[in-house]
Image 1 (tube, rainbow, N blue to C red):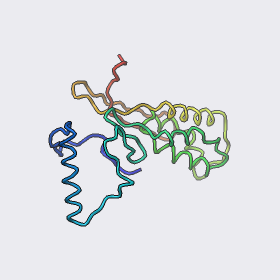
Image 2: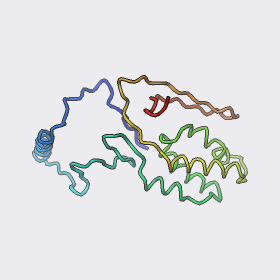
Image 3: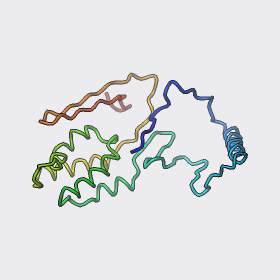
Image 4: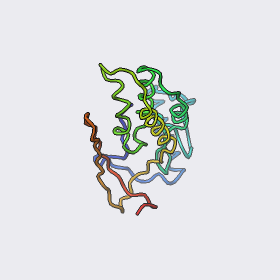
Length: 180
């Protein structure tokens, strides 16, 4: 997955609001003129203008936040039970692309990852199937990741597995409106 900013870092400065559609259209015209002057051309088939939501790097971005691509979620959820390490590796690669939408993803998939170790024998057990289904269910109900509200406190949430292989994660989170 390509690296991406989730919020604008403080080192960059947002140059005013573009709430006014006319001002935004003037800015677009200026950008296109600079492109034309430098013999750079946009592929209009790949451009999206005045849309409430746009696809970016396998996610959908809108003013309300970032959500998982429904096609990717559908592919993950309709994936058949892996029959061998190659099948499992393919599914984990796809599921990992959307890991940021799943709480405790790294710890959850640890039993599946253990099947991919160098000297591990392939034996798909009920606990593997349960983890496989739980991750699919979690991704099927993936939340919309919203931008932080500066008026609310942020929390650092750390998680570590208690298994033999160390899996840990750390997230910066904010309580949802309906959470207490």
